[in-house]
Image 1 (cartoon, helix red, strand yellow):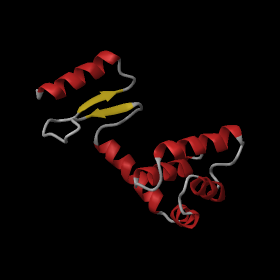
Image 2 (cartoon, helix red, strand yellow; image 1 turned 90 degrees about the horizontal axis):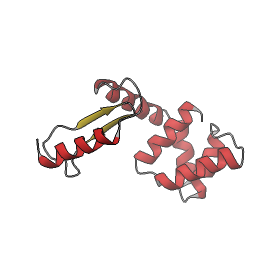
Image 3 (cartoon, helix red, strand yellow; image 1 turned 45 degrees about the vertical axis):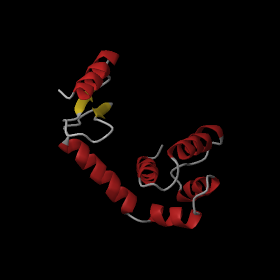
Image 4 (tube, one colour; image 1 turned 60 degrees about the vertical axis):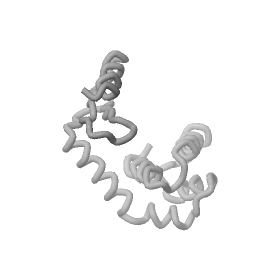
Length: 124
């Protein structure tokens, strides 16, 4: 769907505003089942309200540049990590341990993921 709207929805989700599964389901339903324009702030406000968010707060967020600023920040962080294509996975320990995260670029095989998990779990 629309790049800026999708980015703002993603930022809204990761900021703790809403629930990722509910919002993704609602966005896909609105777009693919109901044929709605999910780039429209009004549509996004209605969707936010449908799963329990305050519509006015969601509309204010969408009208602000905060979501766009956060998306640009995420893009810059990705570039700093060397992300040049997607998919791109960063695998790190759940406890935030001191080990360096493992990076898998592109569509990695299950062997790549297993090796990354094993390396992290062994502390190597």
